[in-house]
Every structure is written in C-alpha cells, then in structure tokens.
Length: 415
Image (cartoon, rainbow, N blue to C red; front, side):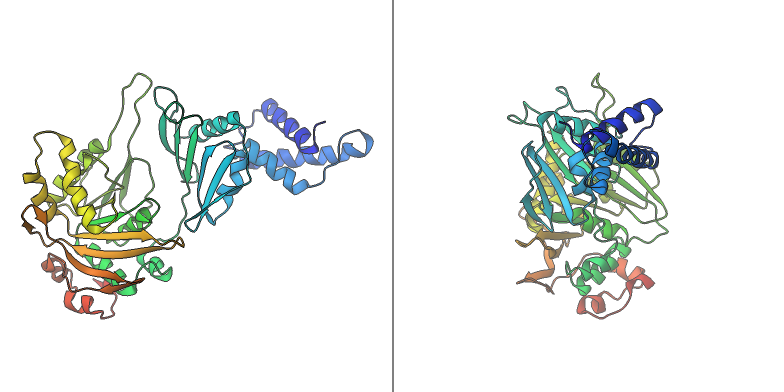
C-alpha cells in the first residue's frame, strides 16, 4: 500500500506535467503546488481510505527534493558543514565534514544514481556516456561534480560532489581559522601586491583552491585578471575579471577546448594577471612561458611539499613535446616562479599552510635552489631566514620588505 508521501509525490508530479511547470527553474511555483496538494490531501483523508499524513514538513521537503532538487542527496548539499559527497556504489554514500569522512545511512537504487547524475549534468550541457565516460561539471550552487561510469569503474557509477563552501574570501579569514599566522598572511598579501608569481601546492582537499582564491582577492582592484580553469571554481571578488573554463568535445569528437588553449587566448585579452586553477600536464609549459614574459600570475599544483612542487613544475612541461628539454624548463622555472605556498590537511581535518619558500632564480647542477621564508615547527608556522626575490618590486610599491619579514605590523593594503 502506498504511503501518504508517495500519494502526494505522484499527485505533484502529475500536476507539474499538466501545468508545464519546470521544478528546477521555477522553484517558487513548485513549492506552492506542493503546499496546495498537501492541503487538498489532508482535507480528503477523513472521508477516504487514504493513509494519514504524519509529517507535513518532512513530506514537503521530500517531494521538493525529489522533483526540484537532487533527491536523497539534497539534504547533504543543504548541510553547510558537509564539504564533499561521494558515492562508491548505491549502498555506500559518504560525506566529509571538516576533512573527516563518514559513511551515511543513505541507500540508493542503481537506476536512481544514474538519474541523479543526469539531472545534475543537465544545466551544464555536459554528457556522460560510453564515448565520454568521465565528466566534470558544476552544479547550480557552484559545487563541482565528477562522475565515472563502468567499464572504467569495475561495476558501479562513481560520483564525487565537492561543494562550493565559502570558507574564506580573504587572507584574514584564513588567519581567523588558524590556517596561517597573521605574519605570513601580511607577507603573502604584500607579495601579491608587488606582483610576485605564486604557486599554491598541496594534496587533494588540502585547501589549494580556497587559498588561491584568497590570494586572488589580494590583487589590487585596478588590475585586469584572467582566470583559466577546467571547471569554474575560483570566485574572484574583483571588478575587472574574465573567467574561462575548458570544454569537452561534442558527440562528433569536435569542439574541445583544452587548458593550453585558454592560457594562450588569455594572453590576447590584455591581462594584468593570469590565474590558472590547476596545472596537471603540458599546459604548465604555456603558463611558464606566460610568466616568463613578465606577466604576473598564480596557479595551483598537486604536490606533497614545496620542493616536490618545484620538481613537478620542472617535469610537467616536458610532456608538451620532444623538443621541450630540461635545459630550457629548469632555468625557466627558477626565474619565472617566485613563491611556493604549501598547504596540508591535519589528521583532524584542519587545513594549514605548512611552508612558504622562495625561488631566488639560481640553478645548481640541474636543481632549482629554494629558500625557506616560513616553515613549520610542530603545528606552528614560523619565520625562517630566507628572502623573496625581486626586492625592487616591493620597494616600487612602497613596501618595507625587511620590516615586513621581521614581523612589523602595518597594513600592506595602503600600498
């Protein structure tokens, strides 16, 4: 026997079809229609054999989530404490809170998972099929979706949703959260203002995108910023920004726009800064060439330490072709990258800046030299003895670099 919730769900769905309401784009009408159906249902219960409605609010939420939201996953998307949701198989739905994962009690049917993914992909126009078994896309709230289907996965569709959580808009927010010291934040802000090239390095879910976003918001508002990403994740709070993302090929295998193309096109758009969300392969060569031309920029990279990030940036450009050699790449990295900021996640889930290193621009025996600006001692980020390159750029912006590194407190924004 159908429950009251099932009766109401079916009635609402039929009315939506008859009235031509799109529940995803017209949520106000959908809510009104649900209330209308529930009220009518409650009026009929005393004089019919319909089962009584025990939880009006719960039923309304369930029906709305099912028709206008993302079904059983909607409550996780609405929960501000949850950072990520992933499904390994229909009976295993996980979430992460503050960096700590947990298995939920939610159980889905195999067809339900696929239906949810198709509904999630509809606004982006991206597809998931045998010819394109991987997909990256954005949900309407800015969360990032990644899905993989069999036979790439063994048996079940795999789904990851990384929610867009506004954890920090500026470096001061990271200081308040304990992710870095005020001293380190003042130095990074001054470095961005001075136009140094910054790489944010770290592992998955370490907070690279959040830190990169706060650094972008330290850029002086008079500058024109061009961002290039695989999927829109950065949220610059600046007046002059153009954001670009990659595009998958169409059903005929045409129309693909890769990250390398975006970086090249960005250089034709009169940028004051270029920001690449993350480099993973040969597009790192195009970024290095852009930075080496005198255009300030930033990007993120997966790496377990600042030193490993530098090594990776010396290796990835070699994927661009046989004519690209280490003899060109290594000194280019040394002279094009100024700072590497390493972020990590503690066992308890806390994200922290672990080290900030500088590249003085020298190469010794094929190895790029680095200098520690800030380093970790225990769980504390402390000043080391290194100095950043391009002291003249700090002077040009009226920033007293020795005083800044000594810990003198002043507002670098005045520069």
